Image 1 (cartoon, helix red, strand yellow):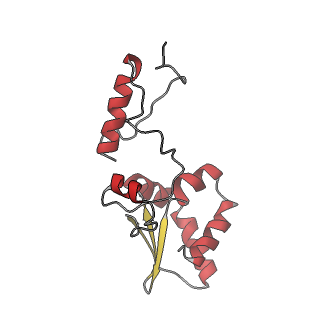
Image 2: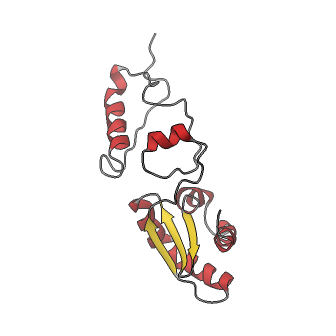
Image 3: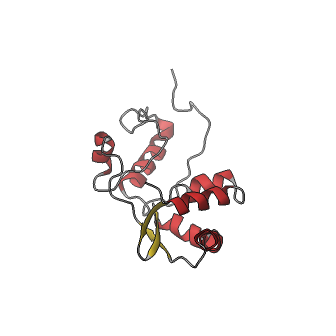
Length: 152
């Protein structure tokens, strides 16, 4: 369950930051509240560093205002314990990583990918990224028109 103060903070920040920034950097953050304060968990080091550099000072000001007093805020890379145990297949695919909500189409997998001569390098690179997140080809950008691999 999302912390009420974090939910109100996000609502306030929606008016200040672009929709892209909100969905790319702030919405993926998971939150937990304890006696020490608020802990925000970023899905990876890149997101953590970007949030610290671009958004942290504003987040702290909004949270302190909403709390009525300074609120200790900790940012870490990580994920909360399994939030949706009904997704057994996705959990198995992620291994020990906790699940997160996403809008990825489950039909688009490496197994269903149509590999052609024109996209062999792209597929190999994407598989390396999937098997070594944050280490291989970081960041990976694939660009091209749609349907280039399908020739009949």
